[in-house]
Image (tube, rainbow, N blue to C red):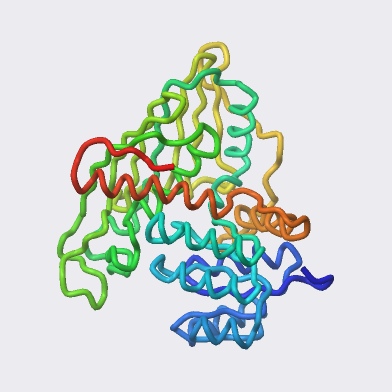
Length: 362
C-alpha cells in the first residue's frame, strides 16, 4: 500500500453503490465505477465525486489501475474479475456469495495467495452493534453449551407476483436464489460465532414459476424460499429460513439457547436506527434488552438505506481490510470464510435436489 490514500474501483452498482461511502469514510479514493448501464454509472459517479466511469471491468482494471477492487456483480462473474484483479496487483473485496461453487471459491483463494494480496468477503451484517455484542458475549461463555439456534432472513422484494424478475431468478447467473441472497449471511453468522456446519438438509420452493429472469426462456430455477436444518460440529442443531417472497417484512433474526441462558437478536429495516440491531438476553428468567458495549455510528436523519448500510455496516469491515493491507495479514471475513460458507451452500443445493442429509466438505 502506498503512503497516499488507497485507490478503489467498484464493479457493479446495485448493492455495490453502498461500498462507495464505506471506502470514502475510511479516507480512500474511489477512482472508478463500472457497470453495463453507463448512464446509471455516470449518475452514481456524479453523486459521489468519482472521476472515471467504465462499461467493461477489463477496461477499468487496465486504465484506472485501482489498488483495490470491489466486486458486486452477479456471482457468475466473481471468479473471473477477482483472478484478473489479483493478478494485476489489486486487493479484492467481493460480495457474497463468494462464487458459484466451492471449486470457484478455492480458485479465488489460490489467486489471492499467489498474488500476495488480501481477499475479503463482504459479510457486512456481522458489524451491526447488537450482533457484535452477541458475538462477544457468546465467545465469553454467556450461553454455555449451545443446544439449538434458529435464524430467519425474510424479505418482501419479490413477494408480489407482479414484481419484475431479475438475473437473481436464473441459477446460471446467481448460483443460488434466496440462500445466496440472504441465507448465506445466516450461514456466516452461525459459523462466525457458533462453529462449523457438519451436515445440512434443505427444502426449497419457487413462489411464481411464471416469473423468469430477463432473456431466459424457461421457468425460474433459483429458489425464492428455503428451509435448512443443520447440525454443527459442536452437536448444536440449527434451523435457517430464508425468503424473498415474504409479504410485509424485511428483517433478520437469530435466537440461541444454551445451558446458561438464551439470546435473541433482531435487525428490522423499518425500525429507528435499524442499522444497530436489537439484542435481548435472559436475565432472571426473561429476555431483557442489552445495550452493546460498542456504540453504533450516529447516522440519525439518513434515509438512503444503501448509504447507511455503507457507512454503518460496510465501513467497519473496510477498516479491518485496510488494517490487514497495512500489516500484511488477511482479517475475517476472508476469502476462506466465503469458501466455507460456499461449501454449506453447495451442500444445501445438493440436499434440495436429492433429499436427505448432506455432509459439508472441509
